Length: 391
Ligand SMILES: Cc1cc2nc3c(=O)[nH]c(=O)nc-3n(C[C@H](O)[C@H](O)[C@H](O)COP(=O)(O)OP(=O)(O)OC[C@H]3O[C@@H](n4cnc5c(N)ncnc54)[C@H](O)[C@@H]3O)c2cc1C
Image (tube, rainbow, N blue to C red):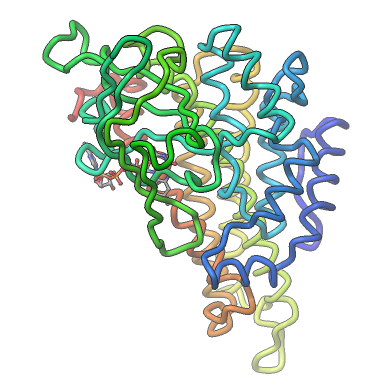
């Protein structure tokens, strides 16, 4: 799109959008192509975002953060993606701290949040998924067993993104065996692990090379000893704490998808106007313009759901349904726009230098992570529509 599409923004959010765009202009396609080729971490980009305070958007002022609203945070992620950049290298820094903020002790908040806000402490790693249990989080096998003033952690996580570039990890582990809990959601606990102390002392990180550049890893715990005061909230209540943070994650990832969709639509529109075949712009053909128009309408509809979810989040409402629908619709919109964009560019859509194939690979992820489309649909079927539980 030559002109960007923004509706219902207030002045503060408009300024934030402008600042994010200005920052992102310093990280053009060549930068992302280079690190994509090398599967390198975009350290300079993350550093710039951190210094500008954008990653501390949701940390309240009292802990040194920017104390911004969810809509402002979503606008930051959207603009990053609409500018052709990728927030996946650092988005967790924005929302993972929410679990500490809501459920941590005062001592934990005072100890960690100001450092996270200043960017001196990186809380980028979120260790939930395991190779054997996958989506079935309640079947995870990593255990944390109390041993005096410590817990001993054993097990394995997979897809723990950014673990190599994080100081802290929010870890979900089983503290009570599954057959000894009254409710199936009990018995899991959350820990804020200092990976700097644990690395080489029971903690091993192995990178996984993926379709797109994502700095994801598998993580092994072999008698990793962590202080008992790293437990967040009450022992055994961790699953609820993690769930409560997932709504924020879904809204922010959905905003990234909207940004991606805008980027694809913008690229396709500009190209369809300028590429002349049979002596006229390809965009003059309805066979080319209709898919672009359809992707635009789909993006706008998804954008409304993302805004609605963010608005209700700010109002403190229960937004399980809206956060899930925002993620579902936005991920579908970005994937549809990506596919349309490749088609509009024809052969050039596959050429590295146009960035489309890279963004295409990057945006595919959101059909699977942080929650796969099927699991959102089963959530809506069961919890919104009252259909029988399917699993
Ligand atoms: C690049 C990347 C980064 C990630 N980053 C993180 C991270 O930082 N931290 C973290 O904890 N996790 C992370 N994940 C994990 C991600 O959340 C999971 O991959 C995702 O939740 C799906 O789990 P799974 O891969 O184990 O798939 P599985 O659970 O094995 O499912 C495989 C397929 O079967 C479908 N399926 C399974 N059960 C059902 C059912 N009952 N009904 C219908 N369909 C079903 C799923 O939808 C999916 O399509 C990441 C994943 C990737 C690929």
